[in-house]
Length: 301
Picture (cartoon, one colour):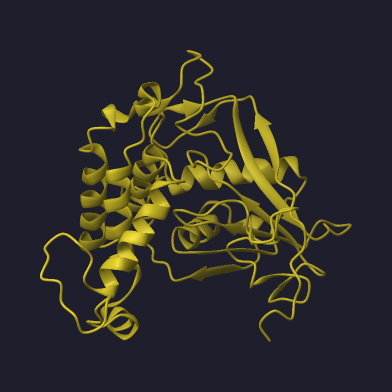
């Protein structure tokens, strides 16, 4: 029943890792921080831990609300909590913000410890396998040698799948939701068009826009609009919006103003996204999506 379960108060945490993390690209990153949250209690033998991996624009805030912010529910709050599908009365749930993201973990907007300057465009390219290795190190620090399960949707599902290949002895179950073992050519093409929208925005400045005090919002808006077209199937989009006009039967005969409900939806999503997401993070995460292909001959050993 909607609203039957009450959300709990979530507390953001962070963990610092001074040692270098080797990356699949051959580079490494050191003195980095991972933001995370935990829900429930770890049992005596530490066998009830569940890792939840996030998708492109999500974070470690998987469930609950922040104190004093009643509309701050975690992105999977309907699934995780006391008495819910992932019952925190039984399980110890961990949400980790991926490296390179813009919600607390070290990313392009943070300072490079080797130079003291903001990483910007110099932040190393990451892969799904790199994220899984970083998550494994965090679990080591929490004293968790094996997961009851790893789960996630979309890009999070790729991480859960990669866990089964990289650390099969460290997890008992994997729940992969709305995901795939790789992207097809059309998926990669959509990602590339979205990235071109960002890098050709005059405010992008080659990825070093932080120093200029600007944000490439136009590129981010278009990138998000392109993404949302791929998130809905043709049938679902027609069912949800069809050819409905925003202002009833009256056509304005304009080429630039909003006419259709689907246009309104896409512009709203684009505007909202450009206000909180980092452009370099978008480039990094979509490229990680492109690269993931564990069955490929180029996959990490």
